[in-house]
Length: 405
Image (cartoon, rainbow, N blue to C red):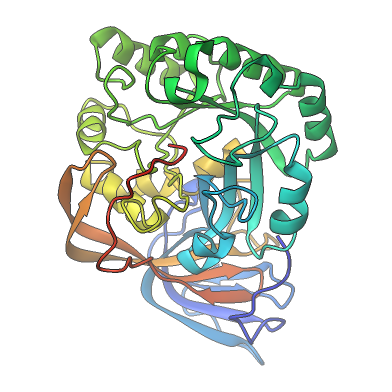
């Protein structure tokens, strides 16, 4: 994350954020409406009701909005120009309320240097990455698989890439579905798991069309590993296929395996989410899997994805945690004391508004959202960036070509 926020002309001055309702800060969450004073150096100076503005402080009126830790999207694709499916960070970042973006396998070891130099380092957003176990990453997504055969993986170079970029690489990514692996079966998942263990990093596994079978994948995972697309509705590849695989998913979640939404163009089912949540199986993290082929339909942004999970029965406070402190913990960011004096200010201000928006999942099913989450401001240090939901063009339609999820 660099100190470059062109939409904010008042950086470098203290800022008083007034009349906001904290949510998602855990035991540190104050009750009721408060003001937040951010010092000129971008750290929290004071939190409490009716704070004095002080000399030279810039006012940011919250008007009763909620304030949470800065949103964190655990699964996006932002290697713009390096893959044929990635979007620019700003399309899903600060202007959408999101402070931290985690790219899920767009780059492999052979092209990670370019991703770092041309996207990660110049971005205003904080960007972490899960390194694709396939050396080429998603250069030509679903047209040229990154896992054609054993020659697609170079264990030694992948480990060297991790060591050279540990400040931004926070895990290993493997796509484990038939359309990617062909006749490989479960082998690439085992290789990726071994690399992740050697590197001391979590493994994120994309699940979808079998083979390999979902139960095969779940049985390989350890606490801290991530199953992305946990509520996909693909026949033979989702947690509602049979009682045994559902019980295994419950067991994994109870043991600490992270269930991540990873909506995407093809990997979120209202029905699967509603049934699982009604049974008590909630996702630990809510992510978008945003890329070029799902930005306009059906995903839009993180705020809309959060609202979809509320519509599926997930409590509001759990939704906020799943888009803030829980994904932050996955990538090693601090999650305690985020409103304490001296902590760097990283906040998202948003409203919860009534709605009657008709919207689709990845399977073509539709529902209406009675409540929407509307981001208003993203505060990073002493910068404040106006934020809003992404509103697609009216003619936007479901793309005929699939994306990574």
